[in-house]
View 1 (tube, rainbow, N blue to C red):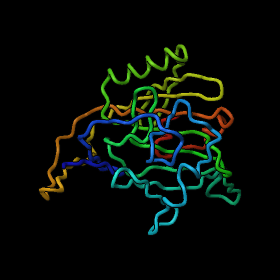
View 2 (view 1 turned 135 degrees about the vertical axis):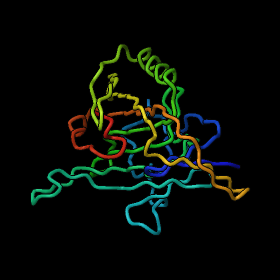
View 3 (view 1 turned 90 degrees about the vertical axis):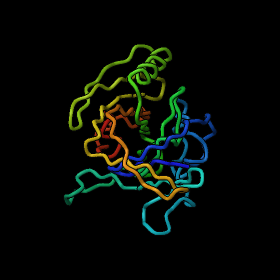
Length: 237
């Protein structure tokens, strides 16, 4: 079986179909997380339980996905981080490795292969960020149309990280949804095809594409968005 993986700046693509269904709120990796209806009262520690903690690295978790694992880093968020007035205000769980064949979360009919979660110091969910890579223009438009059908016309915001991009925003009772797509030219990406059975590794063509970033924001923590500056959250505002 040939598998392709993505880790940090290196992208590995998994050439299997994305499948899955909306499961109950179980630890990440055991069932797809329902992003649309996620209960914000779900303790983040139940999504990343103690049994997932890495035995080798402090503040890292190994998320089981099939017979493999994905690495997640737990990091404290500070304001005035490098001054004497430093104060911890939250925790981020940032996924550091992924495969495009994973279905860790789902929203409507769109699957997402990578997740990052921002939480308060007492474990309440502030915001969830989810990524899907290699999507087409039609994929993005269909997802926007589905959200517009359910929540009305979107508000357009301007985001900026390296370059400017458009963020589509919808508001629901206790949450805000945001979605953006970013063009990736893959100039700094290494793509490899790994065939474990044959024991071969081959380079793959780099194909420019769009990546989609979907965010579910807890309205109770909307003012905390300004403190989220890393990982997927660079595309939230």
